[in-house]
Length: 183
Image 1 (cartoon, rainbow, N blue to C red):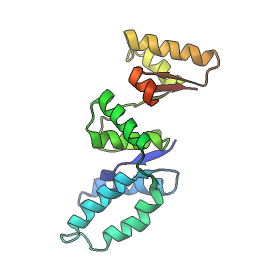
Image 2 (image 1 turned 60 degrees about the horizontal axis):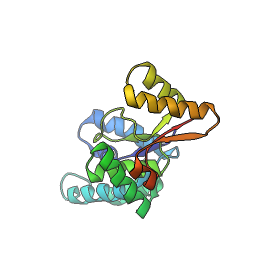
Image 3 (image 1 turned 60 degrees about the vertical axis):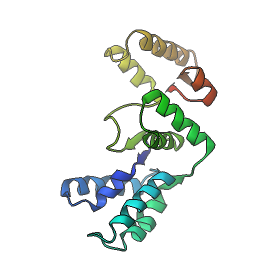
Image 4 (image 1 turned 45 degrees about the vertical axis):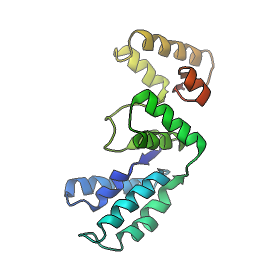
């Protein structure tokens, strides 16, 4: 399971709130020792905030040190047409702001299964479900009526040997965006 870090997580490394700083330190340390990712947008947001604060209470070398020690090692995703199209599809479907949708799209493009951010709805799944997760959504009644029928169809396809099934609409088919259910 790979992780994607939003800018706010990295910025909490410099928080005056010791609890938030400790949580951020644990997440970033684990990220640096795994295949976690960030995007160009995260790099820009972190450096923008840090350089604005550098004249305040923040140590003036923090932006450069953060770039070298945290941002560059985690940075894996550059802008692309596909990324922007996916962000627009996420925005349309989930009604997040464009910049939050761009973060979500970047996490999906990087193949991450978890996104650390305080800007999103806690625990929300976007676009990908395992077979077990789909079954749980049906059995617990979270997925009802039409969505339960769609998930059942996807599970039937997986049982028949399909590797992954996508639940989407016409726009999603055109942009290859939807909820993927896989083994």
